[in-house]
Image 1 (spheres, rainbow, N blue to C red):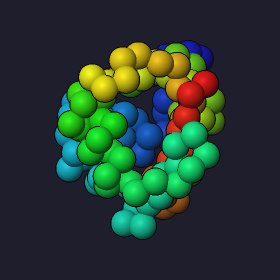
Image 2: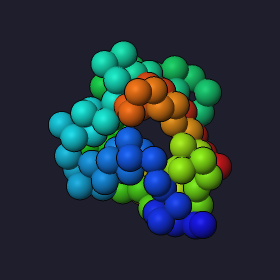
Image 3: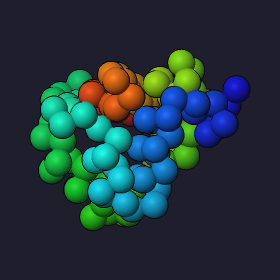
Image 4: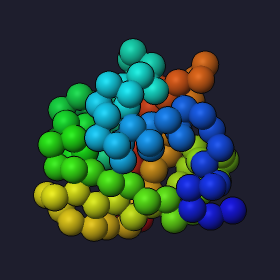
Length: 106
């Protein structure tokens, strides 16, 4: 399957919906309290990164293709800072919540 229909993992689906709706509270509700993030292979402060790359810059994620229920996906990502780019995302889900996000250019 391709596109958002291929995202069947509830935690990943909730995270993408929250991101696209600009809903910071729902975004963090999809994460474990100790969730971590890496961007292009470098660990980042999750809260600062999310605020800068998603919520203060109107981030939008459109799934192009997904495997493993959406835990691994390729997406067109756009924000007001960087414009549009093809990105890869990988999510580690534990107990129904996302514990790690790895993203970078695809």
